[in-house]
Image 1: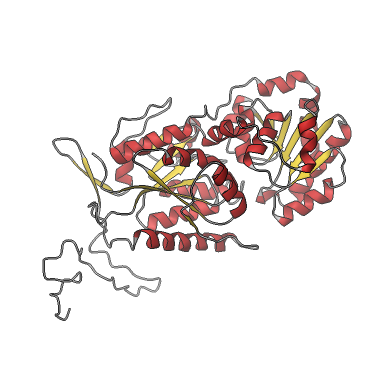
Image 2: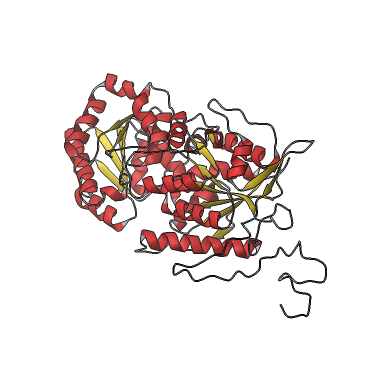
Length: 471
């Protein structure tokens, strides 16, 4: 039976990669006859995010406005938690003191969707948990095995996994990671990656690059192009400098190859890249590119050198080899399939691997002929079908991997099952009535009320005393 909740779905995002991978899902939800997306941006990459969502026709319901120069991870996280709390209270009112499952009380969204491994995603998941809104984790189950690489992303996604009620995992290997950590397999669903949905949508548009420094790409369809991106926090300083030196050496060694480097806006990254590559003729430095033009650039590329997670999935969908400039990757399926090669940030290793791909057609083909393990472009469709099943008890969506169990997802989210003649019903479990909240020094925090106002007898206030009488 349908859940007694609002059909609105919160979607919280803050960075351009999140916007890129979530807009196919937002588009699907906007077209859905019953579910409604409520998109909240954090303001971290405001102009970049707004542009992606605007181009995709996605409406933004709110902006937390937390982005500012010099923001630390702790400041970002606390700002997102406080900002989302304020947004939800402003749009839906304060949360009920206990959640009983009745429609007029459970007016909060049916779920809060977060994506991937950003600090804003982890903070949004914590805030949603505090507000008793079930969390759906898109791109769940990616792991490297060490919390310091990538930092802080690896621990962020593990934190979200502990909070999430439902895990939309790109691959079966991601599901296995979650199960090893104690997540019920019945709360996981293999969907593929929404980044492939986004890539197919963007590449089909073939829009002009629209930048003077990239005009040669419009006029030169034959030169080989190597696309390079580098921005990971753990590579700041020596790592980024080493990647840039490798590109410089490759440009000198392969005069017929052109290199395009979209430079990350972070000043520490940008200055390092410009110092090493600013005067190299075969290297074109450009600002971060709009998504649809970057998708076109990927399709035009002979090789990609990157430390980006999303590109590790997107480029193979276009048959482009990827050298991953990291020592670890959570996209292990790509390494196993042969679409990716880990090269780290050592300049010699990068140069040797890139030279092999650029000079040996068989080496290039060894990458490009492999099928992409990350999806077929229907990931957003599967996730929306799953949400519809969870909220409205519609038919179970099909999947090539393990299926999920609605009851397990809802019970983890705090719904209590009761069997009825026409099928099971689910209502939200109330908070324990005998729980006495305390602060860090064991001082009791007095609750506003311990009585459900909708259960109060006629003629009494929400505090339980007769109207007009002293409590």
